[in-house]
Amino acid sequence: MSGGLMALDRTDRRILALLQQDGRITNVKLAEAVHLSQTATLERVRRLTTENYILGYRARLDPQKLGAGMLVFVEVLLDRTTPNILEEFKGAVKERPEVLECHLVAGGFDYLIKLRVADMSGYHDIARRMLWQLPGVRETRTYAVMEEVKSSGDIHFSV
Image (cartoon, rainbow, N blue to C red):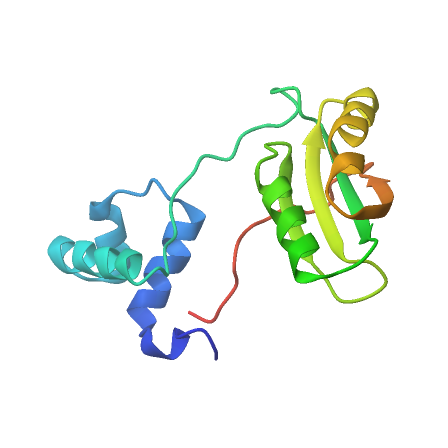
């Protein structure tokens, strides 16, 4: 495996899997689940955090209840992909809170953006005010999500 996972033992991987399922699990329950003392478990969690296997913790929120129920994917084609245009585009996207994810991709377009808005009117406003104004944008293609069949940020690995 790449990315340093070979350095993790079975207990480390089990801790990561359990924390991924429930980031609010108590150290007591986590220690019981991995059959270690509370001190040893806490030390492992600290090491996994220090070594950036654990990047943070967050609550999953309901986008419908918070007025951001529409999920949209946007393909972005730039007019050219020079280093300065790429950097300007990335900088502008990082400043936009509506943008959940942005990925430079290989294929028929340059970037894939995932964003959340209240509705189609909200998307139109964002497209007009932000997307079409981003540096170097030549063309966009929009895909409004009709149903989220599966949405997970979980990373699957052998335990």
